[in-house]
Image (cartoon, rainbow, N blue to C red; front, top):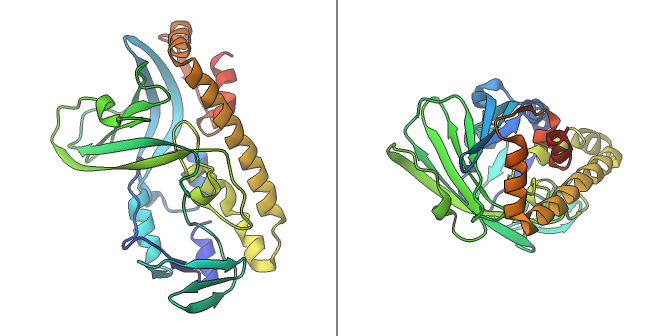
Length: 294
């Protein structure tokens, strides 16, 4: 779908000087297929996620892939009129101003999060590869509302942590040479509605994990009727459904954070050593609790 939208000859104004956002990029296969991009952007497929709390573990059977978002964005930037290092001023749904010049047409806001609401800090290091085929997620009662991860890829390993205060404290130890380091902040807020937008401007990232690609994939196919016929019916319908899901995730995470230690101890005591198959719950976190207790 992302490729088909290129037929409309979009112009992309980007505040950044270069395309290519670095992120862990773990998405469900369903989300990946909705993006409509080539499998060449898949670095690895995973069937197992192991969640660790102290000496207890829960195993998840999944169907997820690691999307190389950085490479995808760079390639897409070469297929559109890409204007980096610009600050576009949106005047309406059909016009914007860039460096004093007015542009008219469908204006899709992808201006990013405005900083209003809660935020968590994330850090990720890239190391030499390790011999593993599973994703490992670590939970710690000291890291309220946060988690850490190790994602093994064929040529490197992604090691990261997410926390409200200092994620460095919770980085997993991997005895491999560090090749790279990056990080940033991730919003935790309820969805916001704009007339026409996509991405973090809508605050529709998955509340706990911070994954934003899922929300983008849910809205992509609604843009075709909008761009072809000016019909926003499908876009509004999908945005409304997406907003409901992210809102449920937001309140669920807030509730778990208030009883973080108890939630971890109870959950891992009940499920220690079990293997749980997860499908759509990988994206629909609001239904994950019911799946765990099924």
